[in-house]
Image 1 (cartoon, rainbow, N blue to C red):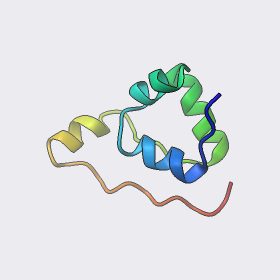
Image 2: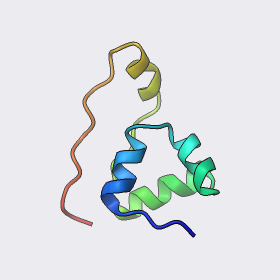
Image 3: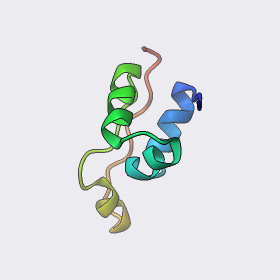
Image 4: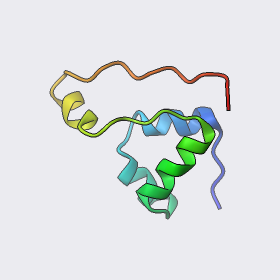
Length: 67
C-alpha cells in the first residue's frame, strides 16, 4: 500500500495525468479522483494536458490548508 501526503498527491496530479498516476498506484483513475476529492486536492479539468502541451493551460490552483 502506498501512502501519499496531501501535498505529494497534489504535486503528482499537477505534473502527470491521473491515468498514469492511477496505473502506478494500482487503482482506477476514478478512484484516484474520489480520493483527491475527499482529501480536498484540486485536480486538472478535462483537456488540461492538451492545453498544457500547447502552452495554454491555466496556472494550477493552490492547495488550501483545509482537508
